[in-house]
Length: 215
Ligand SMILES: *Cc1c(COP(=O)(O)O)cnc(C)c1O
Image (cartoon, rainbow, N blue to C red; front, side, top):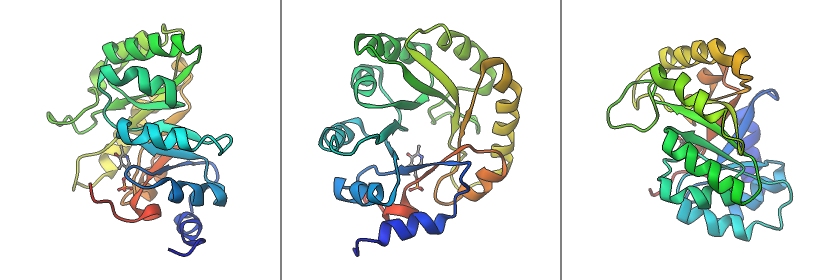
């Protein structure tokens, strides 16, 4: 791959400067992350903790790089997530929040978190129902080592995403002021433009930057 290829791909996404781009580098080698970094990209998203930790350790020469955990996190991996990541976008239970809070405390850091909302109410999917979100928000804001910044969602696969993005936008606006929320993370390679129309402050793009994945 020519060295300016990843930079060109990021540029051609045309993300407005008010929206943060999370470059989803899961399964991709550190060389590709370095290439995006040289181009100016700083936030990277990973969702397999075992793959991510060695990459993060080997990326210590890249100052102010930020790692966001975007996959499902088993609570026995909370320790690793709190140690290596700047943000966990997929908090969906009090149990997980509790574990992340304790672990972040041990590393004397404040971990930024988003609550993952199962906006399509799909039984097989992770994330919590929007109906129980306030209870989880109230729990998290009382965790001294967590900083609640907002919500994340993945709309149902293969469906028109706009109605779901709209629901997320309403939910975000409902709680934004009272809970000082700043981030609404939604939109991936196939639908980030629609997500931005519905107020996404953060989009998570993998395939359109790094190419197809094998898993
Ligand atoms: C893989 C992944 C993405 C990126 O998906 P692409 O379609 O490759 O852009 C975004 N968000 C989450 C939670 C993911 O797991």
